[in-house]
Amino acid sequence: MVYRIVRLERNFIMDKMELVILETSDVHGNIFPINYGNNKPFDVGLGKVATLIKKEKAKHAHVLLVENGDLIQGTPLTYHYARIQSERPNPMIILANELNYDAAVFGNHEFNYGKELLASAVNESSFPWLSANIISKETGEPYFGKPYIIKELDSNLRVGILGLTTPYIPNWEQPQHIEGMEFEDAVVTAKKWVSLLKTEEKVDIVVVAYHGGFECDLETGEPTETLTGENQGYQLCMEVEGIDVLLTGHQHRQIAGNMINGVIVVQPGNNGIALGKVTLKLEKDENGWNCVGKSSELLSVADVEADKALLEKVMEYENDTQEWLDQPIGKIEGDMLVRNPMEIRTKDNALIEFINRVQMEVAGVDISNTALFDNISPGFPENVTMRDVVSNYIYPNTLKVIRITGQDMKDALERSASYFKQYEGGEIEVNPAFSTPKPQHYNYDMWEGIDYLIDISKPIGERIVKLEYKGQPVRFEQEYDVVMNNYRAGGGGDYFMYKNKPVIKDIPTDVSEFIANYILEKKRVKATVNHNWKVIY
Image (cartoon, rainbow, N blue to C red; front, side, top):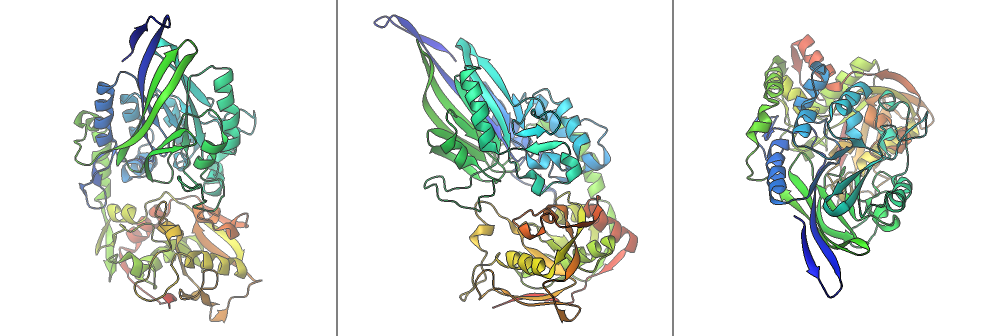
């Protein structure tokens, strides 16, 4: 609501306005408030977030709604759509259009299903997708066209929204999915475009929507992670003059109420567990609009009723997904259930050995690595369905065989071994670098085809005390062909030893499909454990 107060003593009219900016980020395909692993109610999803959005829009006269990336990938529903029903409209875009987003930013997972599906999503959107730092190699201009938009509200308030995406994407993504694109440094790009917004576009407020997080402690500025350029939120606040609001994501953190160098910041977690809200109090005098107050908060979806009318618009997609998920595909003879994730990560076990063996068979090599991606993976029950497969292998990863040296192998194992805190008695604990600011269990790999021991009583970097291949010590100068997922093969998870290694085989089919097809073909799969590795102390 805009209201005017006449101040006769100064002979001008002052306008006051409250501007609310709402942010979703890292929704990851979550629409319905359920856990697809067991179909039980779960406080997640765009259905619940929609209720909050509509409530805020009804309460405030001036509201901007921004999607901050990683929208179209992440659940069985979006996987089923992308792989089986992609000729139809994208269900995530159907709902985003219905909610009248003002803009969206590309997240790293927007690229997972390929350029064609992403282009369809962009074309179907009734709102612009922004990214100033994803550049066309051919033209040198923003690849997707729009680096920013300007929203003009009452009393000529001009708000510029600039979109930025973490430039670290080439370290993870399939090259064909980002062909023709350059990913520029977010800070360098922001300096250019924020200056243009202020000086040429004459905006009053600059909102930067950045699919990236914070590389430093928000209070002290001390680095909290290796400074690779993946997360540059703190640097954006400190080095780019003119930003009023920084919307962030990617790290799946819940951040609100923080001001960094005069910039109000927010990050709403992941999977639609909360809606980010920024409130700006503005006053206009003879020199223009001034921001006189900033705050940010998170609105939780806990105990919020999902918007049934919204869910109904994609119910057909959900019903098709549920039918697909419950298709029986085979049986497990033995135990492949996950009861204790830490135990899975401390000694060879049937689930991880099975996934590695599937990868080895598909790739035609005899060394493989994979991870237990999170702590809610249930493992495989006796009677396996597609639901079990996608609940355990949650990413649309494909496979690559890369050629590495024995030294690379040792370095990679040391990187994995750093997952554990140095053991000093008591319970085995996770190194905070793998749990803060977000859980990174997916960056701890377990191998098949080699024999090794991890001694967590030793310092990080000195923990691999045994490393053998076919009964002989691994020779550091010798080369070995190893199959792993495409994320890891590109160096993702700070496995820098893999970067630019020769790709012997690129296998562009989702690993979950290979797992399902293997079980379908065999009909019965025996749970086996050859005890080729373990953690000691």
